[in-house]
Image (cartoon, rainbow over all chains, first blue to last red):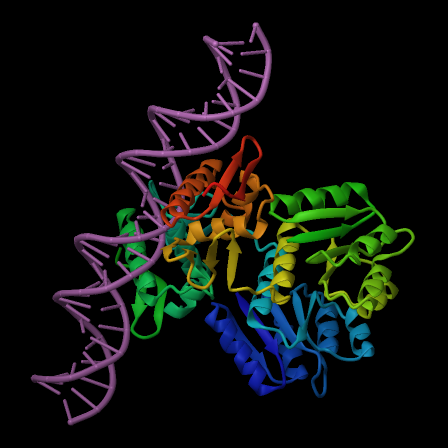
Length: 225
Length: 225
DNA sequence: GCATGAATATGAAAATTCTGGTGGTAGAGG
DNA sequence: CCTCTACCACCAGAATTTTCATATTCATGC
């Protein structure tokens, strides 16, 4: 899941970036509206987060430009609790959601999940290498063989599959799978990676969970297999 | 948690009521703005859900009235994807959140949870009879004695304590504790009620979990104890 | 009152998840 | 090259949760 943050206040932008990355999103930041628009129009993002108040092109104008290019990317608008005019303009700009500053991270994450879900990014199986994960039954399939995953194993595997080769830190996996307010520890991830490796091997999958010291885990197809 | 739904379309109103009740809220419905305002001003609700489009007093007007009485009850406004004027009016009416129809139940429940949480309905212990549940540690205390609850036991106990003597069906408990999209079965509730009864007895609590055949469970103080 | 069936309670095993510990390994710094 | 340390893999046991089977209770009609 790729998110573009367009925000000129560097401090906020960077803390958003780190919060979102901690929650397993891939994040890019543009520090002004013009750059933001340019990036956004690449059409590679799953969500845009736009600050309204920016020098030059403001959030509404960016949103309008993006919509005029017929991009349906969901837009989350960050507004200050401000005057009416600002907000009137927003109503027609094509934003999907408004979050009034200050907001806390729970609210933001809830919004993002709602928007991404509403977007209907619905698939029923994730495929990688010679292996696929059936999202309705939680069964991992490779050729003739298959194995059922437990709930937790499923969540971890799904998250890895959604991120393909992109590296995920243990902290990221913890916050997305166990929840950002749980008190699970990194060893949980290590243990479940162990479970998954065993199950992947048991069905002869060529998918490997690689670990990169200090950086986390990611998937890889093992060609020698 | 008491919710007031103000909605003139009877069909929608009733389906909201049933959805919310299934999720453990106590729900009252007013079928027009005037009645809605009257109810709302009782100040007994934890959340108001107002439809914008209603004959007579519309949602915005109700919201404004309620706010003018200095009631801080969070307001969730249901809007149709409609014209600008409607929404401009809403901006100042004091609503906390807008949900555009059609919405699905996940969205609605997510909103509600966010609003209730934001409201900071934070307490750190729930007390009933001679017994209290420490919400930070999950320890159930009665006099000198205490016992730690597991995560699941804690969730069930908290939900029961929040509802006091009000009866909760097994389905309700399932949807609130296990999640409305889990596939847990009613026996889970029975098993956990069993666990909790044992723990309550072990600390000499006078709190009883009564079961009412076909209707569910609720708490009661056992005076003979 | 008694038989019946549905609902609830309970016990015990199975499955899953969590916990803490041990040992191995890669990489940094000497 | 060696040591040291942080990090990772793995194991075994504990705790929790789920599952299933069986027992008990209760309302109801007969």
